[in-house]
Length: 367
Length: 168
Image 1 (tube, rainbow over the protein chains, first blue to last red):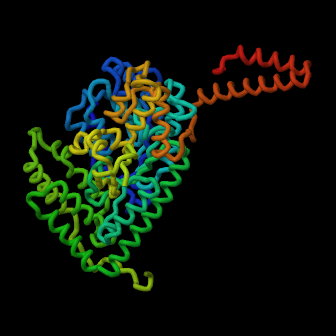
Image 2: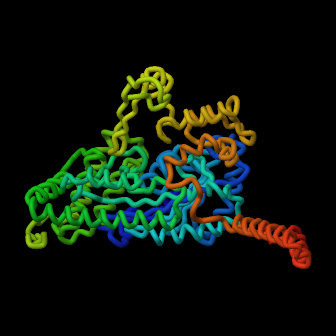
Image 3: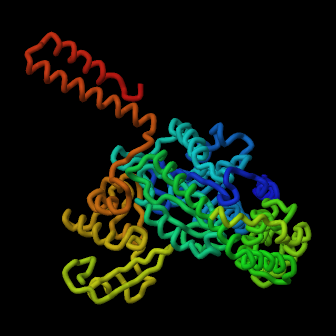
């Protein structure tokens, strides 16, 4: 089956919901594993890489959690744009997008489990959940990992734990992360303080697409950096605690804006609506920033009758590779900006005009 | 201010990097700066950027003490490869480059010993090995106490344990 047919539609994907999803868009736990006796993918010759691929793919596909209705394919069989779509869905990394022969992807039907074969490590397994559900994501991935142990000879040392290509992943090989939407902290100019405080706790804060990317649309990714000397559960619990605090700060920042700068906030949201509904050319960067404000508008009750999922769907549909799916002709940036605005103008007809009178402003005494 | 790499000469090249909201300051002497390719930031060692400045230097020092460049016999990965990529070649590289890695891991992680999940198969063989070691220790104790009756029992138990494969 074609990956594009397999993937959950953008509208259904956006409808998934979870705890705290006003702020936490998604939770992810990733484990890095390697098999014994084969060089790591980055150093392996093609023959070795293919050998690892041929060992790993059937082992992974036989897992109960993967299921017989999963999608499993070699990366060389996917087109450039299909791979980009997978990146935009946060199912594979940018590094994996560049892979071809000897690398693969296995994705379960629900899109809650995605495995990359021969990325930087032989195996990168990820459990994905909407909203804040790190504990659940970890538990489900833990059971996948335990089942794999009996099928593969995993590289492990008593001293260093699970051995990984990069020493930064050594030990547990775990990366726990959450994608956060923080417009309140950005507008309230508190975001740098938060980023600094979080960095001091040994956690990394990054942009939308992970390593080295900009925080477009006020979306930030928080993840652990240290993987050795701390158990998986300790890492999950520590990050969870920090995230709950960030959520609280974001909620407070939104309340403060409503209390003290309601006009400024309404102006931002009203203009975002105007731009999205009326532009005839719009870049992906501007779109994400305006959609972020629209989402905030939905959250505070300024856009009656519009579900958050519609905004999230537009966020996905505005990405370059998703736009490219609309036409067989290769789009350049300029054409894409026009096509994006056409799509947005059309879909924004489903969105009611912002109404600031519907917003409940918290009483000052609550501050 | 002394150079953070050689820790001898005065630092004359000051490099400031803004990464993920964190300011990283690096002070080097002219010689070390040249060596690190700091006159041209694009040729900066990836290992240093990824793992912190001085990572590749530490690795070099460790291998010099062993006489010459280290090379993994299993996969052919060299310390120069590490410097270039910031990654290792295979699982065995962790044994070959252990000395150079030790300091780096200390700054990078919470500890230098794994805590957390241990694969089933590994746990079983680990338990087996520690049980055997305990029996042998008990045997030595029994012999020194001249408790030969108990020693004979222990000796038989060790014999059985040695015959049983770890995976059983």
